Image (cartoon, rainbow, N blue to C red; front, side, top):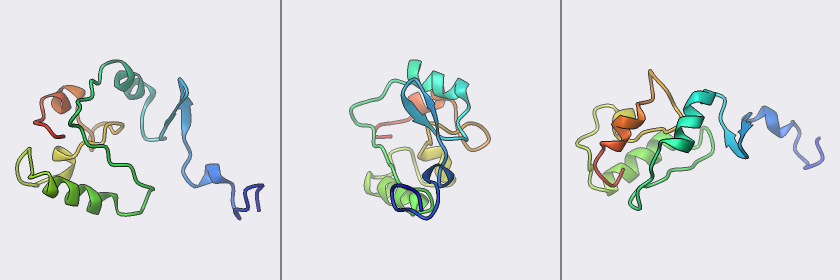
Length: 105
């Protein structure tokens, strides 16, 4: 047990790197993290989905997108209508593509 009472080190559950004081997941390259910090412009209508890994992120994304009225059209590929900002190709999308999405995004 570690000092927090867990039977394993917490950093082994979901390892993050720190960049400029922010946690960055291992699948987000430094160049993408820097671009998010300098180029991404959030809108007041943006919706942020924050879940633990393996806790129904895809299900929740589908549910919220549907509740918002499917602003970017019907779901053919969830990753094209509900962007993961920190992901890059092939699952992610360019910041320009995200900027051109209809609100709420």
